[in-house]
Image (cartoon, rainbow, N blue to C red; front, top):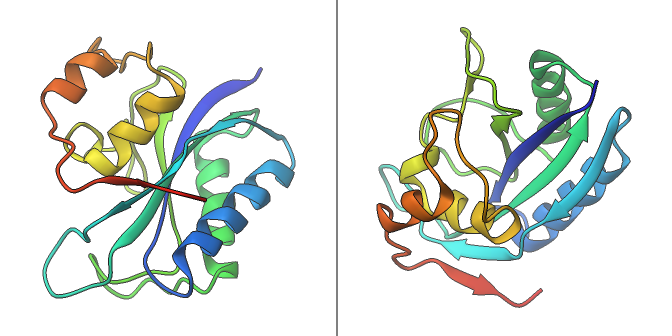
Length: 161
């Protein structure tokens, strides 16, 4: 059975726009997955401590028959192929792929939390997600319009691709 999944994509290293574009191309070719839609790319300031370059972000919608754990493993393999090495939280990264929503499921394991715990507070995720799925509701019933009202667009800018 296919599950609709939304994936957050971000990069602030090694030509971020190219990294996000390549990640979308890789997702489109991933076995057991179909890329349904993708948002525009957005530029945002980095979150967390220290000075970092701005991020390029997007959201992809896929249909997959991978379990959430299997998909996470596939996404981490893609990140590694793009040069990501996990050392510490909030560090700059060539590619970050996050499962934002996995169907209407709530998942809490040692390696995966879905919906993504920061989803409702991250404008760089919410606005691209709302672009491709404006009628979407989270498993707790909150709608995209409600979430957008509670999360300012701030400095988020749609970038020409």
